Amino acid sequence: MKSLIATIPLLCSLLLTTSCATIMHGTTQTVGISSNPSSANVTINGCAVGKTPVSVNLKRNQNHQIKLELPGYQPYEIVCTRQVSGFVFGNIIFGGVIGLAVDAISGGIYRLTPEQIQAELHENQMNVVKRGSNSYVAIVMKPKPSWEKIGQLQKVAN
Image 1: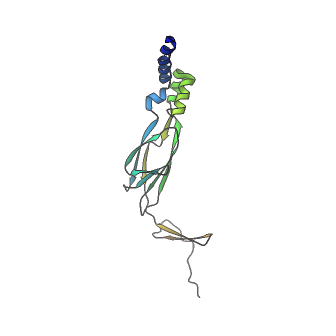
Image 2 (image 1 turned 30 degrees about the horizontal axis):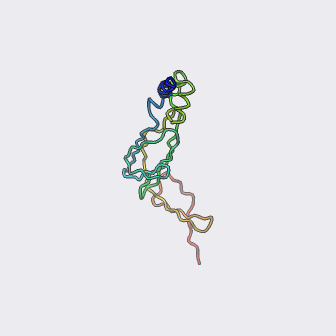
């Protein structure tokens, strides 16, 4: 019985030392989010987290939908995706299957990209109104000089 109790800490330390990526950079990653202009509302996976500039800790084992919104500007959306980190090779060499499994479950083998988000918010130059079930009316407030004119509206007599 004493030998079993003595081996439990040994097994636990073996498990912890084989999960190389989790030990080296953890299960979360800090992502900086800023915008021009600043003070945009930031939501991640549908939850409000603050206004730009902000730093958030995101779980490494999942993708994250990030949305920035500021009145008078078009919304900015980006997905922060998980990618396999270089630490996975350390697990293959030193940790074996146990370390790889621990890091995969905890998310330690992943890194999120992009690591920093710098959003350039554009003024909302268009208003869209839905008319009926299949028609839309779009009004551009300030057309870009590079646009090509393709037609002209005509006044319809009653």
